[in-house]
Image (cartoon, rainbow, N blue to C red; front, top):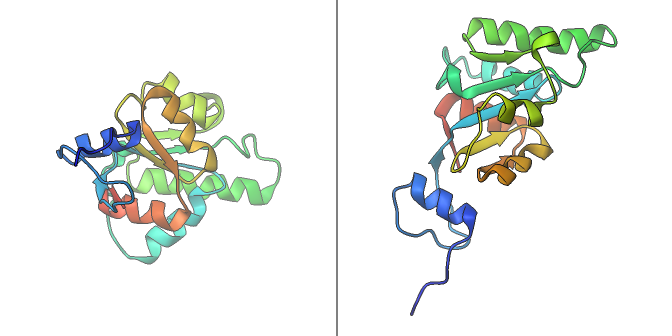
Length: 157
């Protein structure tokens, strides 16, 4: 029986897996090209990551932290959220940390910086992460726990 044509998402996944085909509904584990968090979801992922006692992230160049929800900070709690992310970025030498004047709306900023492109696999702890699909990427929102796991393994299921 002839297999049906694959969707764009299936083509990206099969290419990354170096396979000719992925089946609809099949669970696969694939390496991520980029991960994303902001000043709301980042602190949750950081707390989970640090609770594991893992001493390094999978790749500090593939983690993006954008402080775009509470910058400038509106109150002490907001400033604390940003501080947690800033300290994490410094501790783990995260190359792509954006705050204040170096910032912008996360989903516009990453394409502007050339961080997302066709065929990339991007996960972000934000429901709008899927907008990178317009650039030909496989992009999906995940929870902070999934993001923390990706910071450890560099993979998603």
